Length: 256
Image (cartoon, rainbow, N blue to C red; front, side):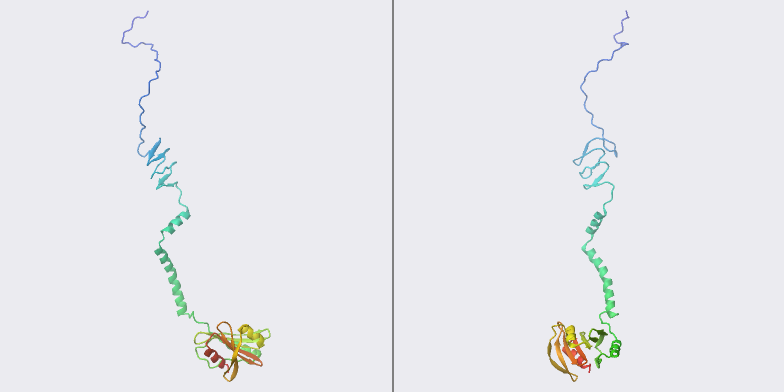
C-alpha cells in the first residue's frame, strides 16, 4: 500500500483530462496591415471591393497590381498612337490652325508677287515672227504679207508655218493694246476647207467691207469672236479674234 499523499500534492501519474467542447471565445478583429503593406483580406474603399492586393482609386476596383486614376486602368502600357493623335488634335484651337495656315500662305504670296512684279508672270511671251515668215516665203506656196505700221502696243505672241494636207498655212498671233487676242491666218488650203476649220461650221458671212483698198468679207466665228476674210486666187487671208472691231480692222488694213 502506498502511503497517503498530501492533499495539495499533484499526483505523479496524472491522466490528461478529456477535451471539452467549450464555446469559442470572442472573435478577434483582423490586424490592420502596416503602412505600405497590401491588405490580405477583403476591404472596402470608396464603396468598391478590393481583394488580393488591389488598390482602389476613385471608387474603381483594380486588381493584379494595376493602378486606377479617375476610373481608367493603367497597366504599364503607353497609350496607343491613335489615342495620342486624337488628344493632340483636340488641343488645337482655331487660332493655332489659323496661325499655321498664315505661315504657309505668306511665302506663297511673296513668291507670287515676285513672279508677277519682277519676272512679268502676267505678260504673254513675245516671239520673233521672222523665222516663220522666212519659212513661208521660202516655200513660195502663196504671197506672204506681214502687218506693217502697227502701234507698239501690239505684241506678237505666236508665229508658225506648217505644211498641211491640201496646202500650207502661216499663222501669226497678236495681243492688242487692250490685251485682247487676234490672229492672221494666210493659207493656200481651199476656202471651203479652211473657213470651217478656222471659224467653225457656224461661221456665216455678214456682208462686205473695204479695208486698205481691198474688199473683205465679214464673218461670224466662235463664241464672241468675229472675222474678216479676204479671198484671193492663190491664198485666203483670215483676220479673226475677240478683239474690238476697230482693232481687227486695223490689223487687216496693216497687211496692205
